[in-house]
Length: 193
Image (cartoon, rainbow, N blue to C red; front, side, top):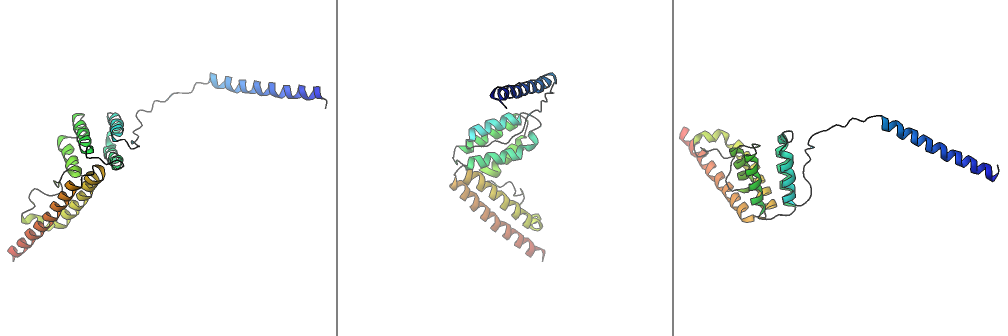
């Protein structure tokens, strides 16, 4: 094969490749690809900036499709806050929960309950009538629910807000309630005899 023949063959290969590419691209251009609008993606926030994460969460939760995932969003915000604990995070969560109430995502009662479970010494798991004998049969369930809530307070107060003092106060209240609950249950059992 001579140099001229090789050059001619190489040129034909290039020309063929260009024509094939044009043909393929031309065929794709004529074919209309439907555009699908999927709506919100309901992606949980990431990163370490709680303010940005709350903003993204609010944007997503304005879509009704994302609202059933509220619990997952809330826990992700707690995880992000734990990466940069700050006493100011308590206010950020409070503002966020007030927003959820104003947007109709949570009721007033639900909003307060979330705040109290994670950022207050008040135990929502404790029945209003815990000092009466009706609590005795439910004692184990009450204790389990309070233990779970104490873990929530640890996550909110200690890890997200670096508020050890309030957490220790909640822990002391937990211990006190256990003593009172034991005493009430014991008194009720003796009263039945």
